Image: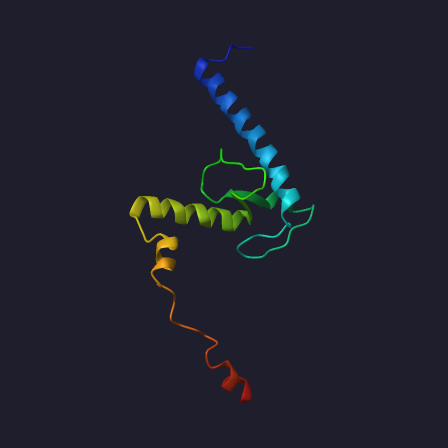
Length: 121
């Protein structure tokens, strides 16, 4: 068997470290939180649990507090969407949600505003 080059060895070590780190916080997150996607509310069982991922709210995969305050469980699709939105915000800029909330930039449309009268019909 050929000896690994320094780069191959470094990549292998990085993958091993990533896998060990993910296993550690994933197991903790699955014990702390119900097996439900935090965005679409899809429920998971042992048979499809591999499709439920741990998302780091601050996008720092090394920030893993024991109380799980930086984690949320997301299905594969919602997790991909969250990271795509984050990448777009980084690339193109955008309004920080926390700033928008502070300045009252709430939506003005309420689809249920006339619900009572609609129910009478």
